[in-house]
Length: 244
Image (cartoon, rainbow, N blue to C red; front, side, top):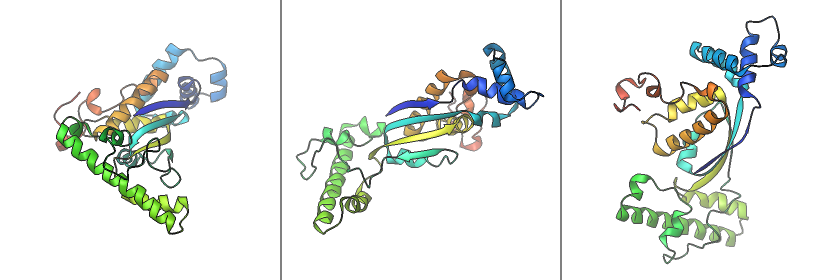
């Protein structure tokens, strides 16, 4: 997994400060911003805004991330966060495989299979289980590639063949996706997905994105993440019982 912040709203804390102050001032946010934003003052003000729950002002700050090498299982969870924009690598237009390797034979080493699939840690730590998992993935890849060839021979276009053959690919197949979220939705995403009850891969993704955001605008992401990181657990009877 690789997470890269492609872009962010310039001066995010200054923007939020001006927007929030504009709610209580005769001056416009532009006038407040043009007067200059002193960061110690802005950070203290933003802390008060966040603590009060007046989070709509965070929606003026937007982040764009490039996410590489997550599984389709993870991306399916990610896109459930609806206040966001997504552009995902297409399995219709992108042939699934790695460096042109043809999986038409079981002679293909399993380590070659591992490059194009995400392996859960619980499976990776046991040699026999890992071998079985990768063997199944190799078989699925063989089926996919063989189906593409059959459909091409039957007169289908490359796109048509790949869009039908992709039904054979497991959720472990790696994918790339571009994600745009505003700061308020990111806080909600971190709250939900950094929780220990979240699935391991999207939790890892959330932490990666969280660290990028904190480095960019720490005051916007204070008291952020799983509720047990800064308060009591909000999961009730579903709590894991192991707070951070």
